[in-house]
Image 1 (cartoon, helix red, strand yellow):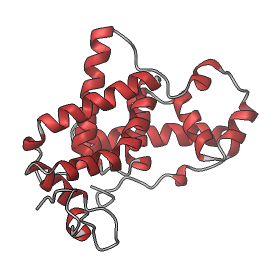
Image 2 (cartoon, helix red, strand yellow):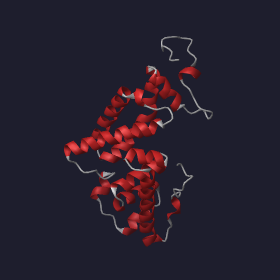
Image 3 (cartoon, helix red, strand yellow):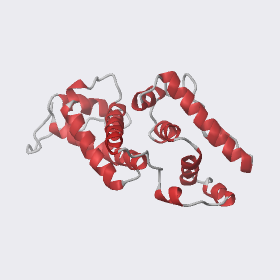
Image 4 (cartoon, rainbow, N blue to C red):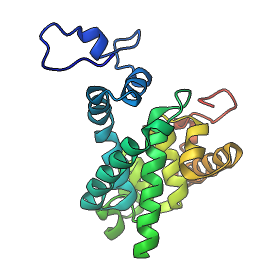
Length: 215
């Protein structure tokens, strides 16, 4: 049940459902939003907008474009919320909408997928600097932006940063589950090979994508 926020005797446990760990229960919020609960939908927006904006900004290379796409994504999600299936991951469903809207935008404008960050696109650091940067996560993703194809970078980002399952990564990128596994494997191998060429480091920093790992 969605309570009116003007009521003073609102049971916050009912209006703000949480899982056993105290985190917001996204599935419950999505189900309530489907029944017309505006407060639940607004909570979904608050929960997911920061990550969605970060995902789209890296994908487009433009803060303004990303903000516009976030607005379009939520508008589309609200319009088609009745189509969301409760057995699916809501973030994955939302990210799929965002990715498709961006793909449509790029087709219309005939724009290539931008690199993740402007400094990576314009700078040419020497090998030593690249290796120093790779010691932290930001440097690692900057290195990935230089040596991986856009689809490989996006797959890694969704799997490791957004913690999507392989199945959800496949859905967002329009691939089969096997195709997503192959893409992740090749991306890890490519990035690991690049690191080993200079440091002897292994690609153990990435968890192998096996059948039982976030399928």
